[in-house]
Amino acid sequence: MQTVDSSELAILRALVEGTVQTTGEDFLRSLVRNLCIATNVANGFIAEFTSDKTRIRSLAFWTNGEFIDNQEWELAGTPCVDVLAGKLCHYPSDLSKIFPKEEGIESYLGVPLQDADGHILGHLAIFDERAMPEEPRLLYTFKIFAARAAAELNRIRVEELCRQSEQRYKDLFDEAPIAYVHEDTDTRFLAANQAAMRILGITPEQVPGLIGSSFIPDTVEAQQRLQLALKSIEDGTNNDGVVLELRRKDNGQPIWIQWWSKLDPSRQYMRTMFIDITERVLMEREQARLQAQNLYLQEEIKSTHNFDDIIGRSPALQSLLNQVQRVAQTDASVLIQGESGTGKELIARAIHAASPRKNRPLIKVNCAALPSSLIESELFGHEKGAFTGAISKRIGRFELAEGGTLFLDEVGEIPLDVQVKLLRVIQEREFERVGGQIPIKMDVRVITATNRNLLAEVAEKNFREDLFYRLNVFPLTTPPLRERLEDIPLLVSFLLGKFAPKIGKKITGISAQSMQRLQSYRWPGNIRELENVIERAVILTDAPILEVEPEQLPAVADNGEKLTQTNDASLDAVAKEHILSVLEQTRWVIEGPNGAAQLLNLKPSTLRYRMQKLGIDKTNR
Ligand SMILES: Nc1ncnc2c1ncn2[C@@H]1O[C@H](COP(=O)(O)OP(=O)(O)OP(=O)(O)O)[C@@H](O)[C@H]1O
Image 1 (cartoon, rainbow, N blue to C red):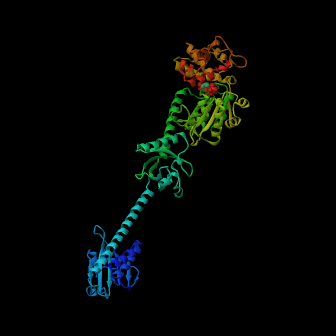
Image 2: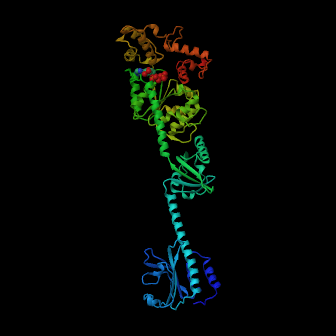
Image 3: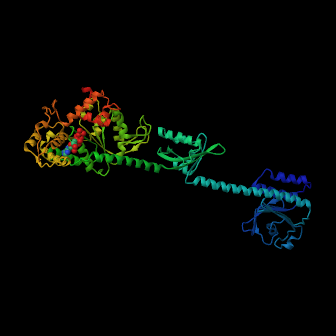
């Protein structure tokens, strides 16, 4: 055993030097050892009580100049019982007589270690085989050591509580279903929880230093949203969270989040929370698509209320219908060529109706009725702000036709730049909205029709050859009416059944002479013209047997072209004259307050379509 420096200073030095450098277990060992040296007692220990307070467990144990392993022992029958009761307890001699269990031990000095609230944290004790007289210096020294020991135990306990609470917070942060990110004020990531990493498609290694704004795609709309979001954070008005569009880091997939961000009181970093609302946004998009489709289909029902069966038994028509039946079962692109009014649209609808897509919509785009600048956005839709006038997002016809068929009528009118895009879309089966960057997958069958000679347009470089072959996988030609004159009686009876009740006339048939007249006419306007002639005759007739007078059929040149007649009274001719005179009057201005469309009370697109149909072109004047 070491000799003791008896001065108070030496004791305090032993205490300070023995414990100042260390914490935790080392501190406790050093404290016990120095306590024994300072008090000149052979044995000492610091211990804690088990949670049921029946046993005692040492944290540091010094015996005769060395540490021994920590141990646990029964409390009952030892002087430690008094210590647990919160008392300092000193047995200067004869300890083993009072506590027979402590055989060979003569003296004992123990004290409870308490926190500021009086809770017992542990127990410090020294004991010896020699007597331990009750000297003030001994008690004084002992109490100083005890105070330090209590402070350290308290510190250890608080540290443990902090560690547990931090762990709880970390678990909560990590495993919360809501995404948490700590970012510095430049949106550089400091930490991200598991939900955030899962939503953003990043790994823990990628987190430090990632820039939050790098998740935002470079589209007008997404960037605008970000600016609005940042502003609302600055103004403190983002209480409901802002919706942001992001791209996942791992696969570039678009995601939408509802985002809250707040500057930490330290102003060093931002506490950001978000939830994944991609599913909701996609559902809303689908809902918008369905609403637009619904609207389109309602219009469609109105405009096709006269849609009826295909009438005719001529071999030319029957062979066409045979091909329709066959091609309908496939997904092949079909190009229907034929003169105006021969029933191309009817055939397109028949293909759709006989195809496996029949329960999905057939969406029609009349490419001639649209100004070329709008065709692209009509077909593919556009994002808000994609171009001047794109005030809100628009869903294109390809999207409306999802799962069904898109019928591009007058496909020869599509401008060359849109032809390139159309070709790519048909090849890759995906497209982007104008001004958008998200590729939209599509499952759409494309049927096209034209009354132009598309091959000649290809030769003239007005139509892309590659697109022509893409569209013309299965070519169909609708025969002109003059090549199936034998269908005229059937068509006439069908048309009488259609118009007479509508106009309110009782007509039972047509005179043989009139029928003969109809069958010897060349029908340059085909069935549409026949419809017009019959409708007009029904209006004019009062008898139950319909008469078609020679003057009701415009004279036709040998090549099938209508002869220009000064007294041409057909509806088309009258309409053409009227439109021409209005156009002259507006100096060929179509749109705007003084445009021809306004004067004729038509939509500009409808007027353009009619002009095209009637062959009205400024360059021919
Ligand atoms: N075989 C037929 N039976 C009954 N009606 C027909 C038949 N073919 C065409 N029609 C009618 O003739 C009119 C013109 O047909 P449709 O619009 O399909 O022709 P189109 O070739 O597409 O014309 P355009 O090239 O001018 O667009 C429609 O009212 C249609 O119902």
